[in-house]
Image (cartoon, rainbow, N blue to C red; front, side, top):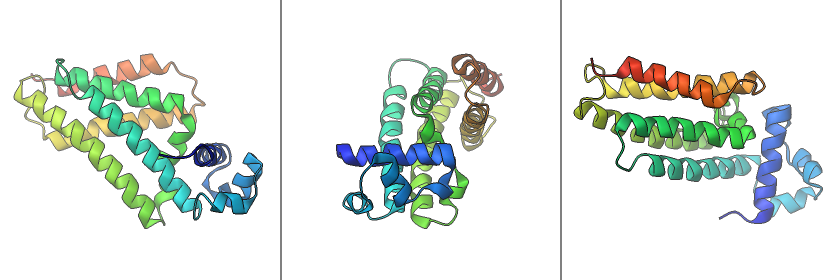
Length: 193
């Protein structure tokens, strides 16, 4: 569990990344944004990589909870997938700066620990989606002629592209409508014939 100061440091880091890019994420810039000394930040985090790991861990906790909540219950696998899809987008809408970290290839390219952390998160989330796709294929709701791994890629890739479109478009489109349209298109594509 992060302390109040750690959360403040993470939030300031997300704001800097979102507004100025990862290249401007420095301990000096974080301390200036919060109004505390650089040594005060080092009492909470070893370096900016450890701050980014903490941000990813927060996302991991949030997404695990969201996936757990939406992947159970007495609704169809496709409805569960739709709820996960919408839930993730709502989480990003609530914290748009998180998108700049989660979907930033430049952040992870040269940092093995960050690459490993985001890879673990993506693997977990993809495994939940793949299990739901497999469940939908077994129940006859989802086309079983398509490998569940590829359907998982279609779903996660579509979400990623929609989030990027939303982020780059300065969050102008109606996310609820767009998420619904996109998921309905995916559901129609993967439906059992």
